[in-house]
Image 1: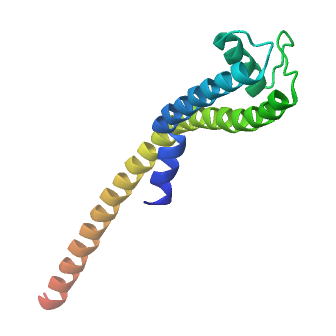
Image 2 (image 1 turned 120 degrees about the vertical axis):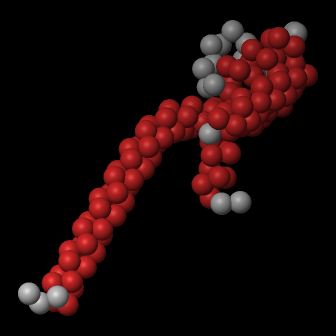
Length: 141
């Protein structure tokens, strides 16, 4: 797989879907982990909330990791969350840049087409002058 195709797959539109899916998976697993490890997270939704606030590094403080296990788990959730949220941000930025790249590519293709037409015209003009010049030399008056 070429580097450009790999870049578009990982960072482009599909990459955004993959990143969002990965984000949901990490938050779901993080919520499950906090629900099991943290005594303050009474419900799965509390675990999800704690996973989200931890992954986003917001930390509102309404629920905080209080055990050594949940604090260690929060380190993992922060690192994974930062990585995945960075991928989502990069995917959105890549989609915005892709629109501009298409416009630039389109403009370049129009310019290349115009240059090819000009070269063809100049080649025909040179050829016709060369033929006219050779006919003048062949038919002295």
